[in-house]
Image (cartoon, rainbow, N blue to C red; front, side, top):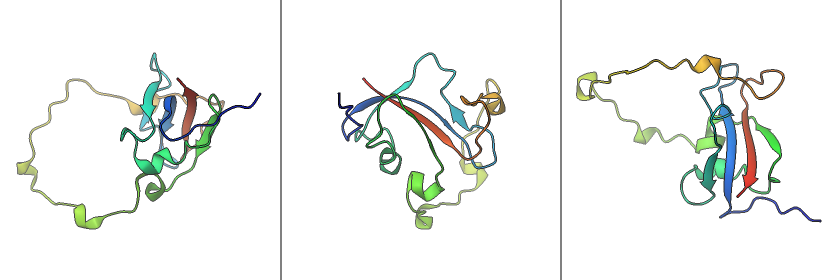
Length: 121
């Protein structure tokens, strides 16, 4: 039996964690009740991130060590704007979030990694 790999236009359910090299998880959905659902090519994910999912076999786990440009494209300094802090609306925090307690789904931490598990829907 041949297993079909992930292709553009497929809808996937993803479990992932994003963390900087040597740091703690910035975001993770491993503790969420359900995986995130994305359709490749619908604009939900940056095209640079989608390319890492193409040709994966659904259900497998993968680790990607990416430089920022590999995940989000080349830096565009001309798009950076500097604004006075007084021009920004006040931000009110209703609760604190401790990002450092997100568990890694492996037996040991892998700094700088991003876990993605692709499951076709």
